[in-house]
Length: 392
Image (tube, rainbow, N blue to C red; front, side):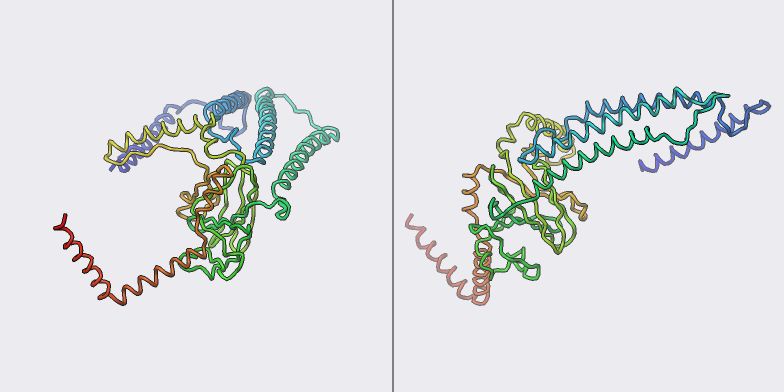
């Protein structure tokens, strides 16, 4: 009903504007007006002032965005060793873009205002100027070359991992619509072979259980990594193109079906330390304020209030991979080395999980095939309970 009313109001407004236009045309009857499509001095002057006004608007909206939205980007919260280099490159690029944009846009719209067309005024013309062309070609080329070489150096430093020398922790991140699964390489630090054709039951990643390197592999529904130790993530996808995105670690790499990609970094801030970061405390407080305001509305509608937000690192998918892409996330916890070892020691290997699942299935099948035996046992237990009860 509301939509119909809005449409009706818009239609009536359109009719009213059309009628006003016709009335205005009637008031112009008998008056002489210029029908030429060529802009005159007054038109050029108006456009010049409009250009200058637009320049002021650009600067004002830029300042407003800095003030209002400046608190949202992850400014100083890099939680990996290489994150500082990535942030430095980003800041250099953004500062250069801001300076160049401010100067060039200012000159563009100021010239449009200052030199708007006037009757009898002729623009100076020259076909070329080698000196000017050399300046405006060489300066951007030099700046871009410096940025590109700096970026390539940082990228090479991040991506090159000598596994034999550095001996990083090897973790596989398996992507599928719409969830992540982590597989740890265990004590031998080598992942066992895997194939999608071997996916069955508990073995959700298709790990080759006959492979010696797979005997100590561990599955986990959240990622734990130790502070100060290099971790290399081996990425696979079961279905479509996904993208492993860990914003606080400045890490992102595509997960491509049919191939293994990888990304490595050294965590530098534990989850507990990040929660105590001044900027993060402010962000969490701001989020919880928004959630509290939303909870008031939900409670008024008879719905459940939102739980308070607590910071956690997250693994997100940064590719639009389907309907539930927005919810494809996994908790990442950066522990101290001691807490990490403790957590890992309490996990069950994939091989053992498969064996346990097989035993449970066999027990269930046996119970199903011998229901009388099961009932007799239950009856005996019940009788014993009845006999003991009067003694109390």
